[in-house]
Picture (cartoon, one colour):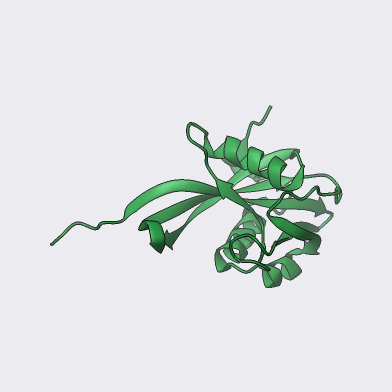
Length: 160
């Protein structure tokens, strides 16, 4: 049986940006601009891991570049896979959840034209990719109290 000609690579990060409020969350979603991939799509922070960069540092950099935000806390949530056919690669995305205070003003980068802070349910309906809905559900299951409880020592990333 011939070996696959595709490769597997941890190459991107996704970052859910969450502002916790009592028993609910506000989630940041952004709409892609007309001159980018998937014009008009709504998504969470997403970007490539640069050479020599850890996924955690890539998440913080992409968060800053796409929103201007710096998180109070950053959590590792999951990994999901997708296939990029034009480069024959199964791409893995490391997914993080960044907590911020309030509903801060976002400074959009070049890729996005609008943003909104939505409830979890609204955000789940708005985002284009099912993997983002899944990541949001997983983040809520793990972090709904604003921390990971007994798993905090495993999921919380020291950023300072």
